[in-house]
Length: 259
Image 1 (spheres, one colour):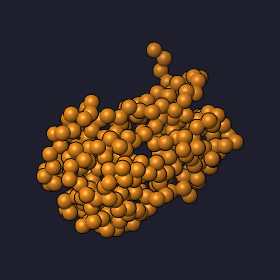
Image 2 (tube, one colour):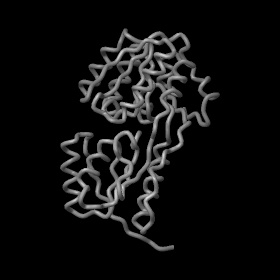
Image 3 (spheres, helix red, strand yellow):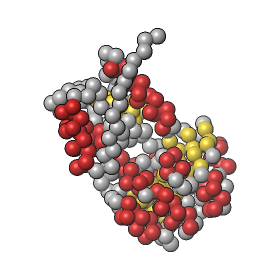
């Protein structure tokens, strides 16, 4: 087999458009062979910065590439962690059949959250379940938003929202202490203390993204973006114990249950 040496430079955009736009300008001027932005805002900023340079872009973990304008662009492809919002809310009702009010906690400046929050509202309206929305864009704002949900709802839903994820350790502590299960859009939330999720395996997503990037570097074609398979329910068993919630019903609902 042929051996290749690939040099990787990492940049942290902090989910901040100003920082990401500067990184984009630097990366394009330095003439990298390929750019792999992670999450929607990073992908959008890199595509904008790269408009005239034509460097291949393979994004990772963009929830809805079509709605955020990341399709139909020359030399741009990647992986999607599209969220099955109705399924997560099905999980919520399976574990808490008497639920009355759901809190929706998200960032109103996070593109990943727009579609799933709209889907959640549609689902809850159809079921006749009330919901209350709280938003925040910084860690402090998200923590304040989570605190404002205490006493107002029976469970909280958050999609694959980077702003909330950045504050999840504190959010989970607030909600768990109040006896409110947090259902979220990625296993990283659950690792940080949220109750449960159903989504993609992010190790597999990273591997798929790297495979796509390597193929392109070797002169391969640009495929359409790839939507990763979901169906993996992840539960934080410590949180389940604290909330006294039985999650055994989840084993009947998904291909894989990770505890």
